[in-house]
Length: 175
Image (tube, rainbow, N blue to C red; front, side, top):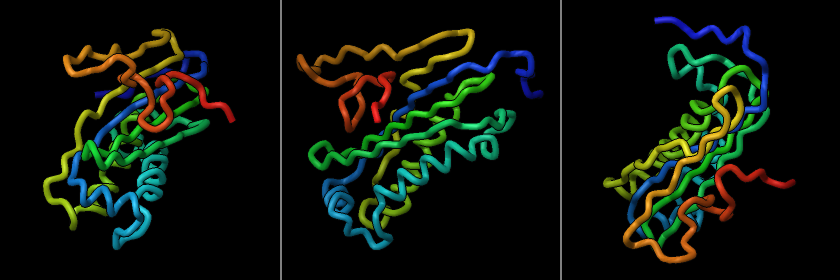
């Protein structure tokens, strides 16, 4: 095993967007949305854990390059009706290597934090659909996940947008 040498590569703008879902009971999601969990504001804790996870990726993933992140944004949206929490992380850096692993680690850390804070209220929780949605920058250019056509999808469904904002995974946030 060895770490890939990226020393000769040019620094370019790198962006990655990842998503994950946590399925649980509507009752547990109601407590989450109302901020009534014993450990406190789990949505805020999950967002913070996601950012921290992105920053600590090289400590968790062997041979992953330590890189300087320019930004990491984690969105968490609990949908009581659907029984799911949708998590999205967008990570950006000016680096020689991509930030896909940082985005994926961010959504996993956020999901695990929610699991920990909600396990008392829902033993059958399930973390699923951890996936890369978008990457850009570097030699390989831009890649976007192509949404699978669902037999149950309705016209106007937001199959490829953000769980909370409706923007496309690769859309830049305006501040």
